[in-house]
Image (cartoon, rainbow, N blue to C red; front, side, top):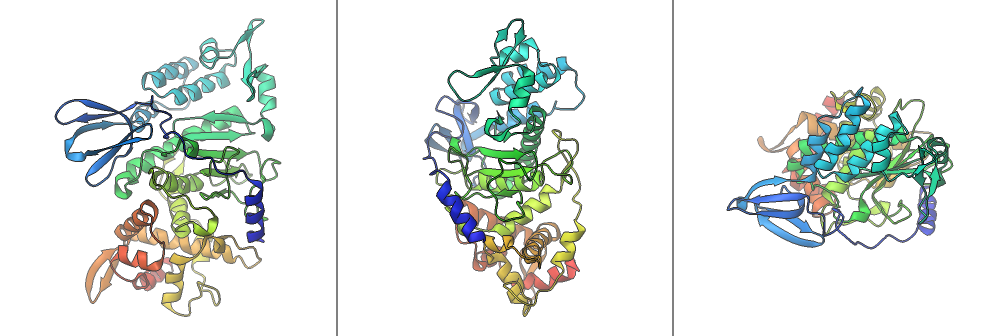
Length: 461
């Protein structure tokens, strides 16, 4: 069933767009600055900031490598975004929200200025400054909002505009510095989602950027992180899905793509259990950040051509679950919070399987095969919840490695640790890229992964 669904999607989707300009937009995007130790400032976009010995600056597609010893200071779009979001808080007056449009412009964040202008229009649809900023024309004393892709766009009243975007084919599209959101929900929900995503991006980069050598942005502009947000699971626009459960998904391969060929796409929707955010938004956002900052930030970043060639889905599931559950707060104002384990995931991870690639006939079989398990196993249909068990074990093992940081002991000597080995493995598998095989993980750990099987079982029980 899964294979047939994927094959059908490949036949229906357009060919991927060829790489063009850099993610920064064009050769005119000179917002990042590199101040040299001996004086002088270089401008462009710094996409690789955390190399051991050098940074990588792009002007368009032209690459310049600069030794870190020659660099006095780096300031990127991320730093400006961090400054902008420091003042992002709920319950501000419309005057305060409008002032933030100018702040975004002063910080050279044009997309955030547009998002902020729409935020003002949600509060006051006829706000003069916000409408003029977005290029909305005045008609008989009232502003009309522009909609459509044609050269001559429709000029709609705010009420008609809000009604028009409730269909997927005429959905609302809004872009921030690192993301694109397309949705048939509402303007307010699109804005909230973009702010949530940018806040998670900042946390990801601040917390893990240097440790895993993450890039600042995607290299190819056509691969900008994109989210398709639907009203609910039965939304007519939601045609791309892995199985009959119609689960939210992030698939970095070229199986799922936008109409313009962008494979960097997550799909989700609102549900009765998701609250005021789309279902699994943070989980999927973390998975998307893994690919975007480790793979797509490099000029030679390798995009898998189908789901079978995705490197290490167990780690994506694990990172998404572990870090995604560390965000909460009001929609649009995501804040970090302590991790709270999910009882169902813990219970499923504790199950011992008598058959399949993760059967526990030996300690080698379960933990070793988990590392090499193909993505398709995590989405197998059936009444035995086998795919859920596989996912639960991947999430549990990842959490064990990153939280407990177990020692890897060989001949009574500590040769490595769980967290350090995990991060080294992610750098090798995604940035290089190399095989996601167990041997690659063994090398990163400094010893055989099955040495961690019994400590993991004791911890999860």
